[in-house]
Length: 412
Image (cartoon, rainbow, N blue to C red):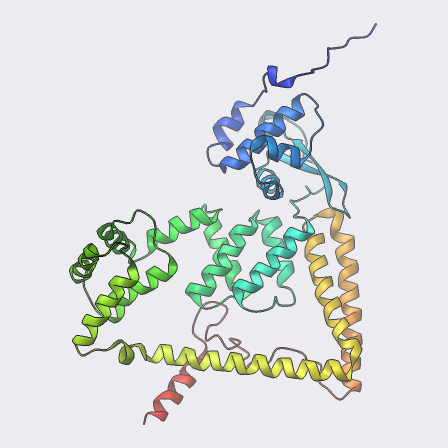
């Protein structure tokens, strides 16, 4: 005797079971798109219907490119597991966790480490390119591995990590990996996990946030201020020394124009500032601004010097350019394999061994050609801060005072 059940031919006529634990403990705090994708996946899983990320994304109305991020999020919360069917190629199946078993079951924990979320190669490469664009520099030797650890060990999304780099570049003037990591981990400890939450948090601690809102209300704007608009408004308070009433008076001048905007108000306040005898041209040449110009000059000159040296070495040692590219590829591969958890450890070890072999070959070729081992490294006037003026902990570099003395001596 056999028992069987009629196959479901139209699953849209049936109901999908969702655990109350998911609804009460996980759903409210999750991004809406991830919730929709999970529910659609649960439907396909319940009826054993064949599907993939593309099908689930289409049914849930989610961008297919966000599906890897979606499963990374749910796996970090313990709601799903990735079961790798092809660790080398990165292929995996999604297993929806029985939350009641996880919370109340007596199942012994597995001795095997859980496979962590993994981005596909294109997404990971895109993240590294975006980081380099935001930081205005190439990734450092072990930086890809560090970024990979943020993705896997701390369940940070690529958008969240990129937000950290952009913030540190714009606000802290330092994009060193260790410093960015400190900022990101601090945000995570505060319960932040998305750029939107970070923006809300930063607005809450911004000393001028309430002033921005009042100015925008005066202009009839309902949106938030952009970073450039904040910079302009900060100038009115910090450099020009105007109070809120004076700024509101300038905002009132926009009543006669068809398209009120910050630049118009800025022009009015700048004119008033000039009339007061404190021209922006003289006040803008503050010591900190002038010191930053010295750092910028150092960075440009050193970048040109570094590129010239590299071109010369590549011409003399044709093999060297390929070695540099292979080293970059190996570092990228290590970060890929790290995101695979246990299955990728052996492959990552092989890449590290290859890096050591390439480094030995590189060192030998440079020595034979009469160059030092660091000849291809980026040149810096100050190696401590790498010509940024800030150390890894965000504090001022000692060279900052040297540049300050230089300017003061020039002025007598």
